[in-house]
Image (tube, rainbow over the protein chains, first blue to last red):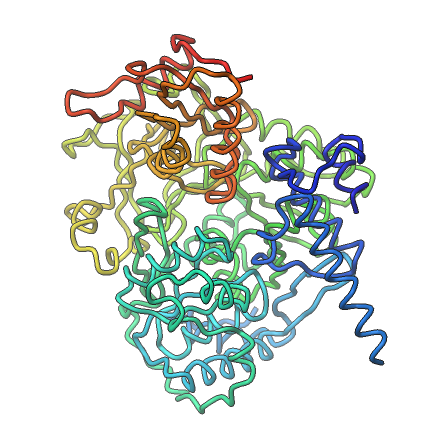
Length: 80
Length: 555
């Protein structure tokens, strides 16, 4: 996931910090930010609602969101 | 084509679509792997159920129902469901930030009370950060889905003069206005769009068009009236995707346009700009764009360079430059006011005066049926051809006034003419737009009042001992208008300025979803003001462009 953010921001993944804001700190413009969301959706096979978008404005926010998605998938798989 | 009378109300239009076009309907493009379809009969049934569920929650005819959802079946079921009930739907942007919640609160207040259909994240957020009146008003789609629908009367006879829905428009998001659109307005306008689109092709669009493909937000007139209502009224196959899907993956829109037969689509200038920027990737996918017979462009100032770039990039894929169809409209006129009806593509002329002086501006066509426009001086007198003035509109699409705001209505509607607040001139029967009378900024199709940016900026800077602030937009070529803010501050330390700039950019990005093009710090007294202390934004903008401001540089 970090690699995806880094690629779109044109930065080295090791320089990203959790509190980095996509637009203000990484210089990602709005269309690129949405490109990132669409990539995350495709990678995880999920749909991010417009309301959830507000959770995904920082590197840390994205990581938390993805972790939550992945663990809920794992829980669902375990309970089958 | 079946030849039944054109419907007089939107409810009739939906029933007629289900009856006359039972194999057509709406496709929702959720992702590259997932598309869902409903025929018009299936949509009608879902709308009946949606209406019944709203009724079970106490919604009655005349009640306002705010729909704050993304493009989805839930959106269609609740907006059209409210309409079916005789309630008054009001679409607004979805979102769960604090700014979004506050905006919903202001809308409820303006509407004198309303139900708000919003997602569970919003409902949860409101418990943590209460906004007056919002918690009680919210009804989630999940709660609605769990409700047994009541039976709703099938009596379709509604006076076409009855208000059908409201379109939120800016004074600003700080003080939104709700334009009242009745059934007659809506149905005349979609018929006008049909005729205007077909004018250059010799027959109304519905006789030779298969469908529309739209990514436009449904809470905006172009997406709502032009996309949804237009398709229902004329039985077009409508393909919908969310704005985010388009911006995140512009090629997808064009690929869909390439495989749905003879189609129409509309977009604001920045949509075409985005496609031109991604043209390499799009050419790899190689959609066949010959079937895209009319590409409407409107909702924000048309940049001739953008249109020319787009046409040049996609001509190899079959897109005809003559398909480019500039148009103009506003929520207070339902949607369409003028439309290119010559089918020759983009035409430009040099602006004679004002902020666009010397620049080439695009023709946005001639008035649609039964509609007149006038270019006027501030006192209302009509100006001759070629002179720049305010555009006024008269016709069946003009709204009934602003809900609950007789003062704003009296300012907007004068002697039957709608004052648009847009500036332009006419030539050879066509309208050319040159700018805005008011200081409203239009960035990527969104209306933002300068003071909204200024309030946020001075709020961010308060602890830094700051003073006056002015926001305006400047044209950055094909990018269109971009926002700039200038702040007077006594702070001098470059590190403090850098932190302040970051804080300002963060707030504006999060609260207004805006990316500031430039944040300018100046010392006290640099921002021009009137004798009463009001910031002179036009003069400030002029000084900025002329490099006359002494900037303090952050680290």
